[in-house]
Length: 325
Ligand SMILES: NC(=O)c1ccc[n+]([C@@H]2O[C@H](COP(=O)([O-])OP(=O)(O)OC[C@H]3O[C@@H](n4cnc5c(N)ncnc54)[C@H](OP(=O)(O)O)[C@@H]3O)[C@@H](O)[C@H]2O)c1
Image (cartoon, rainbow, N blue to C red; front, side, top):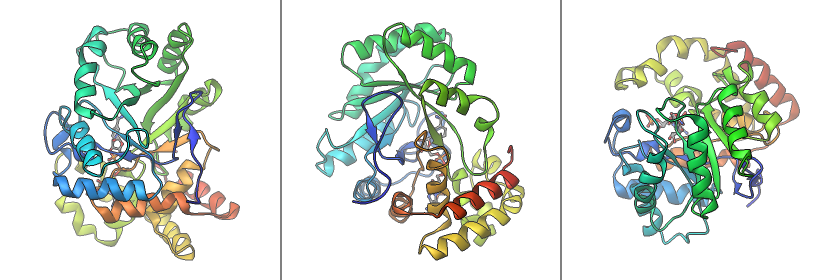
């Protein structure tokens, strides 16, 4: 299938599509942050996963904390039900570090394997930097998993530039590259371009994995078209998707929609395509989807082709309206 080609994540041999599927949405309302999204029936998940694979996406991002393993299990069940071969997909998951020591990485790993069985964990990530364990001790545990051939790559998430350097140096001591830093990044949130994260990642050959690349729906234009949808939002999502952000992003969304129309595409697709082509191949993005239609639309972003002028215009307008640009 034509479109953006597979890219290596960091300096590893893992080849991923520029977009992956974010699987927080598969948490079934369980656990600390699993209740953020409404539950999706198992059959719906299978259809989303199938549509994603058919659209040219070859990898999935999940985490221990998403429904206490529920997202991992739901994903693996869907892949199994679809009879997807284990070597056809790449799985990324994350260890939850809060209040834990480094030994917990090895202690919780068998449970991750069980939840995702029979699909092997390719990329294992530290979910965020707050932990009882130092970064070097976390990297020592990750290096052990790598050396035993249990994972193929090590990543971090929500790490600052300085924290990334510490992780990179510690892993380099074992001859292992730090593959990725998963951070919030979108056309409306460009902080990583100013706080050193992007520059450091590029200098060290670490990939950026952009989470919330659609700003939890703002960049799709859905809330601009139907502002009454704001009233249906639950919990902490109300703090992300606000009337103010809808208003300040309107100019960008209008232009994304105009550009999209010329390509028989949508604002979501233009947003995602622009994001993963902003810095050559340095940035991957993992939009979440709660329906087949969203999954199909998002995967379609891989197959767009924007002109240099369109790309430049999106870049300028995004900088003008982004919250932190
Ligand atoms: N490492 C971390 O700390 C961290 C933090 C956050 C997220 N993540 C990862 O990143 C992934 C994505 O981030 P996210 O879920 O926060 O934000 P997102 O991908 O920007 O937004 C996903 C939501 O946007 C809506 N949406 C998606 N595609 C759409 C489309 N084509 N048209 C209309 N609406 C659409 C859906 O909302 P509705 O369900 O309301 O329709 C969907 O649930 C997560 O699944 C997770 O894997 C990681």
